[in-house]
Length: 309
Image (cartoon, rainbow, N blue to C red; front, side):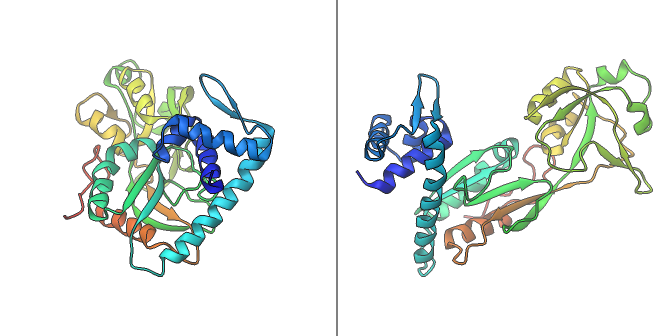
């Protein structure tokens, strides 16, 4: 069997955690994907994966081979990209990652318009609130919210993510009147565990001075929608983006706390590699995002404008 396909199926199985996931990415049946993996292991004479009914796990040999495998596949993709960059064709497969809720609320109509405009392109989108490494995870484009670490990646700002502090009316009714950040000391907070911004749980007064919310951690989770639901049920204070919390505020399920204080907004950016030959497909997709996603990203999707047809 073709060695590159075998390596690609192996890398996809490791990335998705299942043979079925790899099969979907390569548009083949799981049994066919299993044959590619078996052929690769037979050729190498080692077991790369431990298979069970529930999950796949890399063997020590598989972990080492995966690292080299990804390098080889990345080099092949860059060679392909360099060749395609010499043509006017916008085609191929783009791998994109984005934050879970932002992607679910905002990207559907945007990527649909891009696919309609470019029938030769297919997209593989992974929603994940963690910052993935573009090269090692074979990602072409990433949408990120918050602080960007200094790196060799190119970043293009798409807009601002506005943050608010809020709680359920029932929660606030059971606590003393809140007028300043100091009044929140000791109150239960519901925190996003994957936050990458140093401004998390910080607000500014009218004079621009920063104040930290010194609450007591009662719940940490890696999904703000879950935290919002807990806040609506009266579990505590939640701090998050208006594109998630905004609809709850509009329905009266949550109330802004300390409305006279403002939290700093976070940048929403699209990042991609600084390869010498940037594929036209990547550039087209980045330009499409910049032209289709419009501020404000405020109330659960209101900021999205579908690309013109």
